[in-house]
Amino acid sequence: MTIPILYEDGEALVIDKPGGLPIERPRKGGVSLEDHIEELKLGFQRPPVPVHRLDTDTSGCLLLARNPKALKRFNRAFEERRVAKRYLGVVAGTLVEEEGTIDLALSKISSPEKGWRMIPARKGRPSVSHWRRLTEVNGNTLVEFRPETGRTHQLRVHAASGLGFPLLGDPVYGNDESKGAMRTMLHAAGLVMRRENKPPIEAAAPLPPGFTALGFSDG
Image (cartoon, rainbow, N blue to C red; front, side):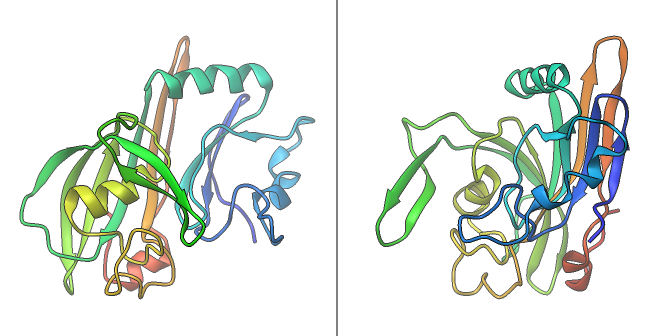
């Protein structure tokens, strides 16, 4: 597997992470992004380090820092919400409204039976996502998400509890009708980070085959 590079300069890489590839090595073992770090050095001595996280199933734009100073600056940019992110997701249902904002605070819970998951909770951490309906095909809808915050599983919970329809293929927050896809249909389609005294980091990742197989296109 060759990891596509969407953006490159002296301090940053943006890669198109394939869906199904975990960033960190799973406890049970298996292939992960760590297996590709050597090839992603691209002649540099230091290995690039992921700045943020994408779920294993989520494909698309992943920012990596190529040195410790860049990593610190990029982390601060994410903390201060100075990174614009665009996601595309397929929800298992038909949306009536064209666009809106989901403001649902999230909290983590866990149980021996189901493991851990995120749930809407009044005393949870603030979580805000803007969304826009794009296209409907066979009762499923392609939705553009622009999250303001970056909570764990934010868009997955906001789709299921905010829109009322889970992401197609979501094994945790989906229902019986939505779990037929090979993986969770969520794609990090774009990322923009503005920098002082340097051009912005801008990247866009094309829709992966799982989306196009369902009849969707980004455009």
